[in-house]
Image 1 (cartoon, rainbow, N blue to C red):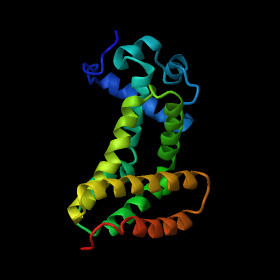
Image 2 (cartoon, one colour; image 1 turned 90 degrees about the vertical axis):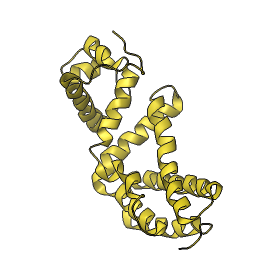
Image 3 (tube, rainbow, N blue to C red; image 1 turned 30 degrees about the vertical axis):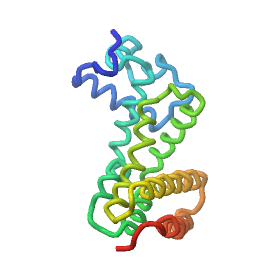
Image 4 (tube, rainbow, N blue to C red; image 1 turned 180 degrees about the vertical axis):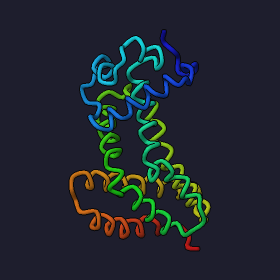
Length: 199
């Protein structure tokens, strides 16, 4: 039975168990060229059961990616931390430090693998990347508006800052020294925040 996105399968214990196993698998092995049947075999299930609970392979990977994200609190709670009191530059530099933490590398690898597949076939993991495309820029813009930036300026700055993070993440995964990237982040961030009113 296929469940529509507006009528999800019951949040049963078995569904949560399967979701956790799939998250384990994709964090360790990635998702490239994975078929539903091979995924089912690897977690001791079958196609019919996965389709019953998740509707499609794409929906399953979408949810499993979010489940995987929950295991990396430094990234999962990143936008919430920007709502705390503090100077924007301090909070945003701290956010980069959270992102660059070595413990987050498995999730960063999964994220960019999913993104490369999505770029080739936009229908894959569409819901996941629609959320990703809006949540971080909105969180950063909210911080900047709170600091006194007008909404248009805050939006442009936020998109630029998240773009900076994405580029630095790629360099990080390519093996560039984390301290060097952090120094680059501090310099670039200061320039990007120049249009934002000082406290």
